[in-house]
Image: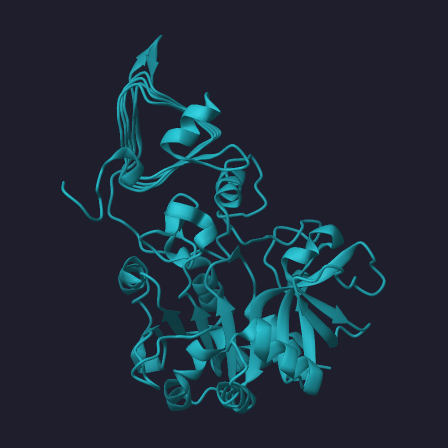
Length: 429
């Protein structure tokens, strides 16, 4: 049995010889207009971050410093963010974050056809880096996880693939890819969004859902991608094609998030959020305003890295009885001015100006937004660049909100510049 220093050295050697590939090419259509002009991994989250900062930070904190980011859909803001915020690794030490946009590397008429195909089209780059293992990650999830523990399990069990999984209530499992496992967590069957999910052995109330995180030995992964590329019936997707084939014909194990998640105590539930809908995005952001949120962004031992904008501190001005700049149970980022307005239980990103006599409650406001005088906002998500006119009222009349903006089933109102007649991207200024 390895001693603590030997185990630490063992894990560090595993992470050093691993190449991480983050799949960040998807739109995330369920986020509606929030992804009209950006890929889902580029969507702002948590007051100053973007969603992709979480898997990237997990890599750095885990000791994985060879990273490729696979992009496709409207990737400009994502690539700009990575270039600005993730250029601190040293090439002299064989450390890097490389951008791998769809570039028709295999056939001049084809872009990425699926998640597996996006890796297949970069096989020459993978071979050039000569990693011993490849860690495939989704770029659109929010969580903190030590990938070193997953790599150690993969190596110790001699697996062909190890799949990162999270325990979910059985009644919710139909929304995920579900792993049926034996008592040693060897995967014996895989079903994509099954009507009757298989429960965990010994725990009939929960199922193991795939997180879209996979570890492969490099040679095995290449064999599987080449085989899949030659299959005309395949959709060239990890969840639909690669993983079911490996489970049926090779050795696959599940790795539970609870074994490697970063949390404040063992009593804390593992934190993982897909934030795939406007309601889920709104809820996950507002969770962070609680006194003790499930996701600890103040953890100095596992920091979330990002591009640091050079902005002044947040400012709160005026202290008259009817015109007082305040924020309660809220996160307010730098460059924001609360001028004689009230903010409650809300998340305000950078460079926001909230004008006098306005009220903001239970809302998420993305960067570079101006809130005009006497606005009242409740349960809203305001996209980047919106100039809200004076006296705008949102969250009090559902029918009026639905006519002007996008109102979700959960009663959250999404507002974008285009909905306000402000052509931020195309059209006449």
